[in-house]
Length: 258
Image (cartoon, helix red, strand yellow):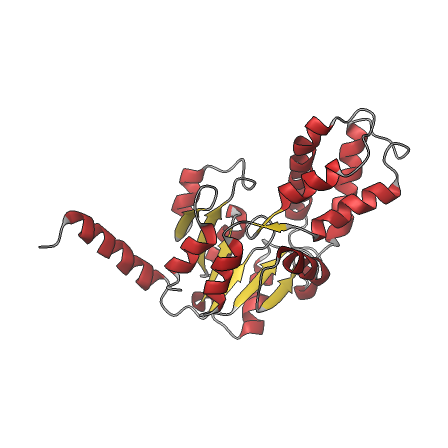
């Protein structure tokens, strides 16, 4: 006799199979989803000599504000030609330091350049390497993220994670969440929207992908989407996995039957 618990499990499994049927490629956001930018940037800040007006205890807040400022710029640029991400990181950092009274005599151009370069060298989340290995054994695993190809190459090599292809906004000519970047990626992969799934820790990214018919898996990360209502996010995506406390990409791999 089938127990109610088994019936629920079976229904959930059936929904997963039906929703992800026909998938041919898995698209991934990179920074925040697969790598832990915050630990990397805070460590880089600590490597700098102490600047007047800026205490090391404030470095986590500075890193968080830097990331938030980056997103403000990126979302404002949607629909325009893809920008140079290093330039955005530099401009946002300069503005944040000026607000904190840190002059170029305190932290000179070389220090600031090292901090901007730190975005190219990031640590993987604990579940990333194994999860990606499982997924790429069954499906092509492709990065689709804002940035440059050089940035993506540097990040995946420093993090020790594997992808089958890297599609940057600089390469494709559009910036997420512009629908044309998703369409261009699918065109290059010779794939229909319903044959792709997007994995990301950013609700705005998945909302844009879903509008085109791409399936969506949200991976919650402790560093991402601080202002999002997670109950609303759950209702906006096909699948929600909690990578802030569990095996994020491992659970995504399991959903994909890997």
